[in-house]
Amino acid sequence: MTNSVSAAARAADQPTKEAGTPHPRSPRPAVIYFFGALGGILFGYETGVIAGALTFIQKTPGFPASAVTTGLIVGGIAGGAVFGALVAGRLADRFGRRPVIFVIGLIYIVGSVACAVAQNNTWLIAARIFLGLAVGGSSSLVPVYLSEMAPARTRGRLAGLNQLMIVTGLLLGYLTNLALSGSGDWRTMLATGAAPAVVLIAGLKLLPESPRWLILHGREEEARALLAGTRSAEEADRDIAAIREVTTHTPHRRELLAGWIRPAMIIGIGIPILTQYTGLNIVTYYAPTIFESLGLPHENALYFTIILGTVKVLSVMVGLQLIDRLGRRFLFLAGSAAMAVSMSWMAYEASRGDAMSPGAMLTAMSIMFVSYSLTWGPVNWVVLGEIFPLRVRGAAMGVAGMVTWLATLGITFGFPIMRDAWGLTNTMIFFVGGNILGLLFCKVFVHETRGRTLEEIEEDLRERYDRKQQGKSAQSENGSTS
View (cartoon, rainbow, N blue to C red):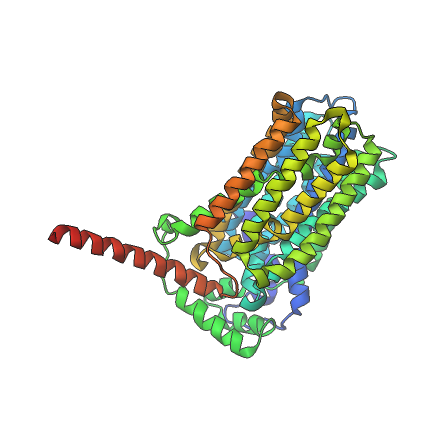
């Protein structure tokens, strides 16, 4: 994969291949942010389209259904994403963000076609795992790229575009399912995932390299030209100076294990796990099958998922306006509390059996979607894109992405098995506990990053570690003199 990325670097980076040569023009910020976040649509689309296609796949000869195969088909993307997220981060630090995004787009196209022509469960699962390489890569690179491009004062909203794109892709997947539900053509459903990837690759020539990556590789004039197109001259000069300062720190292969980075790594590992433990993705991936298991016809279940997808998109649009106003930590805490309540309501409705009200269950799920989309949905990606130091940002985000997808794999593969073994009610109660744990984690470990530059966040990491070390030294000296 390294050779292919190296070749992609030469192809995708032609306008800026001479070190120190300014980019010939500064693209409009809207263009940068749209194409930078487009990988999120691909991520969301693949999530949404499999939810509705699953019923039709299981009715196709040669595709026998079971809890294990269902979990592997849905969770296959997460399995591939584990490796895609880890590798993409390291390659992005070496070759740049743009060329790796180019390779990710190609994998989306090939993987979507491979899924569409699958002849059996084994083939489909393998194709989904391959497609997952791109999903994992985009999930780790898009938040980093948007965070590095955005000014500090609006970084929360702009970096959160990734989540808006994800839920938009999710809704598009649901709409595709409904449009093709009459024919049951799941192959076309899965093949259409290639379309956004074609748009991404076509628009890549409009997407500049990250200015922070350029400075890290001695291309400061290019970085200055790009920053001038997305912020004021004063902000650009201040950001250049701050980036230059943090790049003076000597990198080391083992720096991810350094004590001063450890608090960021705790958050970068804990937040992805707890995001999956909210239970949101069991609704996202399995909403149609959940509704069907509760007695709704398949077409009605698809309409219900479209309602949920629409609610999610609208909620994320509102949530993006709150990130830079209310702050990341507050939204984490409020979201955990609200999701614990809504998941409890879902568990109660599921426990009623035949007396369950479909409208009440849809309302509880909608509240769950709103709560997540206003808070954890956009905020977790924003925070992950902010907290890691520049020199290890790609690699650290790769680790966070890998953990995200390991947790996603555990939930998506495990849910059908848990549901069969424990019942839907007890499974939902399990996720109530996850939301309570998420609230406690954020209260203890998460620090506010609103309105701060990435370099200020990095320096704060160092200062807190230095103060802690000084406190330990003082205690040691006092102990030795007493």
